[in-house]
Each structure stands twice: as structure tokens, then as C-alpha cells.
Image 1 (spheres, rainbow over the protein chains, first blue to last red):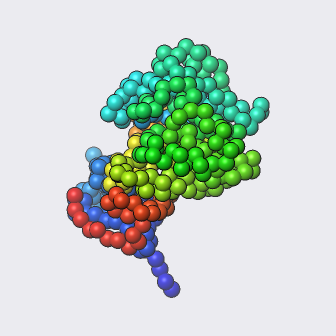
Image 2: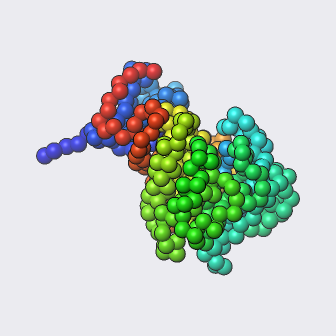
Length: 64
Length: 310
């Protein structure tokens, strides 16, 4: 069975398959893919709004 | 450049959106947050639908600044509508400040607003007008690029009496931009970017775009909020959770309130459509550039992978 992996454009939220990943960049060690130059440029202008939060703690949730 | 607002949903008092939000459109008329020049005082306009009365919207425009028009304030406290457009104008250089140039523009059941400029409009104006049939040529009362773009939209739409889906309206809007881009790309000594934040409605569906002809530049701001109700009570306006029947869609040049988690930027060079069921779709605009002399990255080089870091 064929499976298709998609990623989400963090700016327009569109699901991108391989044919729609037109732009990409690396921000804080993580790769991001975009549907267009416009979305990529928007990410560069407002990266803090669109980047995924850093995964600080993958461990067991603790009560505080 | 200007600021505008579109509303679709349950009937709402115009003043609840025009005056009461913390960053209301009236506030934006003299203190816009997301424009370098905060003043939008070259007139204003409101167009609203009352479906029980007519499919054709009422329109009120005035040359006075919106912040200082008592008639707007008095009317908006008594007019309710399930769909309305409002606009505060900052006239572009060489565009006359007169009532005929105030948005929204209306033709039949359609309303149209623009935030931006068509680069080289004066060089393409004759060609644009020549493309229009008499019935549309003669509807142009003002001198703005915005109203001319509306005429191009109506021409591409064809029979404006036939009901269109949001998707169809959106596609015609994209075709309008394609046509404008085709003409402006052929201008001698052209090259400055065009900014097309357009919004159009027939009272049942809305289509809007946030677009700049050079996709590496930032287009004028445009946001939307959907799936929540806009509630104004005790001097506080906020987007709140609600019953499905109370949901509304607001499209605005700037966030009306500071609850930024409920406002989304429209992605650059994307089309936003809202259908009669208030379903929102955002999709990439597929624009072709023919013979452009401007060195801009093509949006449509499929598979391009310019991996880089910021």
C-alpha cells in the first residue's frame, strides 16, 4: 500500500505533500516547509509567531 | 493604503464592531497600529445587507474622517446586519479625495473594498477601461485604481445576477489579480510592487486576498477570526465560545482585540473564502506572471527546495 507523508505549512496551515513543498528553511535546528515564497518570507519576518515551541521536557509530567 | 473590516454571521449592531472593540476600525482611522502612517482620514464607507428587505446592500460613504462623523455613529447604533463591509481611507498619491472614491464600491448585489495600490495604474488605465463593456465602463464614478479593479472583477464574473459559490467568487478574484498583473508587468519602467488586499461579497459569500506582487515583501496586514462570537458587554469586546448558530467570521486589516490567539494572519498571497455556512477556506493563489521584468522569485516553481537557515 502506498502511503503519503505530509507536513503542515506553519504559516497558511496547508498540508503539503512532496509536490507542494516548494520552499523550506531551518529555524533553531528544525526544518520547516512552505507552499510558497510568500509563506517562507512571512515565517522569516515573524518566526516567533509561527515556530513550534521548543520541546523542553519529554519526561514524565510532574506535579508542581 | 487604508484599513477595512468584513463581518458575516448572526445579525450584529454595526457599532459593536465599528466603535466598541479596543482596536476598532474607528480607532484605526486615526491610530492605525500596523501602518507606518497611522492616519486613515480621507473618507470612509459602510455597506450592509438587510436580506429581508433587498439583496442589494445599503451604502453610506462620506468624505469626512470616520472618527468625526456623527451620522455614522448615530446610524451604526441602530443598524443591524448579518453581513457588512466597512472601510476607512488613506488616499494614495494622485488619487483624488472625493466621495466617489470612498469604499466600499457597490454594483448590484456586490460590495468591493481595497487596501493597497496598483503599481502603474495610470499607465494601464486606458487598456483596463478598453477591456470593459459599456455597462461596466459606465458604472465607474470615481478615479481610483480600486474601483477600476472592481469593474475588472465584475467583467470576469459575467452575469452578476447568477448566484455564485464562495469558491467561484474567489476564483474570479484570483483571475482579476492575474489580469492586473499581466497588464502591469508590461509597463515600461515599471517595477514597484502592487498591493492587492481586496475583499468582495454578494451578501452571502465573501472572498478576500492578501497579496503583494513581489512575494518576498510583506503585504498589507490582514487577519481573520472564525468559529467564535464577537461579544460586546460592559465595555469589553471579545471573541467568545458560542453555540454553532452564533458563530461569526470577521476579516479585518488589524486585530480588533488583543486576544491574539483567536485572530489569524491571512497568509501572504493567499485567498480566503467564506461560504454561506460560514466555512472558511484559505488557499494559495495560483498567479502566472507573463513577461514580468521584475526579478521576483516565482511562486510556482514546483519542487524547489531552497534550504537555508535563519
